Length: 166
Image (cartoon, one colour):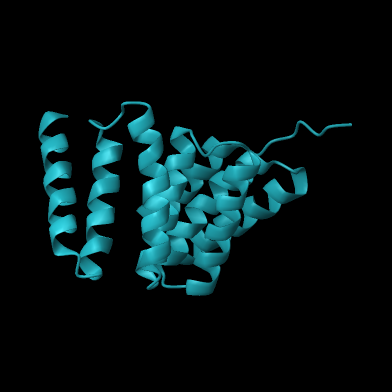
């Protein structure tokens, strides 16, 4: 018998945002851990993906490398398991993962994930969106770290041009 129980993703996001608004990082970590446990208990892979994606950013910002990379790897695995690689949420998760890899010195792997995310936007003709501009901006920062200045500049210029339009 398939379990249809799901976590309340809206409630999770609201609680997490409340923690961030109060700058209560301990409560934010506790919130992420609670909802991750709940999603796992219920077998809610989609809910778990949302929680893990938030965990990736949280642990990156708090410089918890091991936790960030573990959450990132499981997020990517869930994107593929759930068939979301060519979806807006999959692209967002790839961007978050790429940014995290780059933050922790694994820029080359990050560039590959930026390209996976870009494939979604390009294939859907969504290259004049805020999300695509954000991808280009983050990718440019990674290229800049690798001293690939011409490519970084081109990405930043394209991002700026898109933002001017939107």
